[in-house]
Image (cartoon, rainbow, N blue to C red; front, side, top):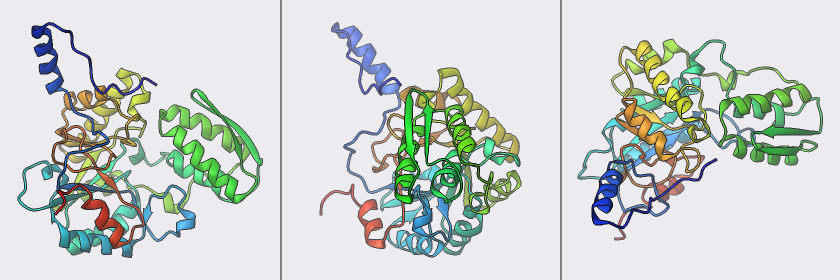
Length: 339
């Protein structure tokens, strides 16, 4: 995978320097490790469900009552706006709430809390996952294949792109380590690589193809959410592949096709995009340029930071977990100027 190129060394003549500077200013700026100070933030949640922490190997689930406490506190600390408005200038600290991947529990547990508290939110959905026959996401299948007890091999060798991994599945502890290891690899690969890994594991450790807790929103449910005044629906691509791992035409197709399919479903094309995985290495600057060319107005990354100073096509988001209110407050105020 080509490394992320932060800067391009300009030629030495003054005219050439000026030309490179103009082109550079037109490029989406990717979030850097050290962000400008700011008070406006975007929060990212995935699943809102009553799941024990031991049964949440990916760390993606926030219980509904904790989510309610989070939202109540965030409403006290910030003015809350839709994600489409968070890039505007604000006099007071401002936050937006987003939820990725389109799980059914977003409708069952997150939406009622948001309605009760009158909090706007944007749901980023994966176009392929809206199909009734769509399989579970690869990380959910891995949970069944690696973490859940059951019959099958205690050691499995898998090939994931350029990586070959020997997975020790003999104990719950080693299985959890295997889950973490292969997950880190697959987050930088396309969906076809993930499908090959799952096929190898399913041959060695057969499991049921799906479960109730991993259900996703249907197309009709997404349309209903988009029809509510508080809620927006944005694109999370077609297959939830790391765009950086795909050839340029395939990555552009992920962006344009998902936008068109959601336009067909909702009656208007979404303005907002969330990059799958959204980290440095999973998204390249060319993907941000392609997002702008595809017609999106803003795109969101999974890099913590304030909104101020960011490009509209690399808006930082703070990924929230099972945090106490103290942990949440520390995370959402970490970028403010010292008092």
